[in-house]
Image (cartoon, rainbow, N blue to C red; front, top):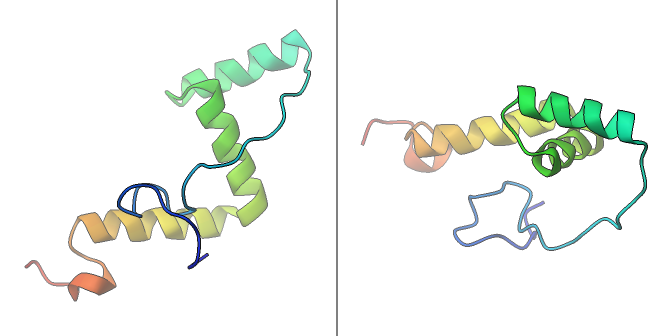
Length: 87
């Protein structure tokens, strides 16, 4: 993942810039409503929720959690790049 195109600072998305699309697909309204309800429960749009669901299924829950935790640690000044100190 090191050679992935990045958005702005390169830290806004650990998987790189959102530069591709999945072709629109058809789905029954009952399933769409259920997915929309689940997204709302997580305070996400349906598109955000589906993106995260696909990302987790493709890369694994553990990988996504680690990348997001690394991002949070970096912002908090606890990442490897900052030496782990408080600055």
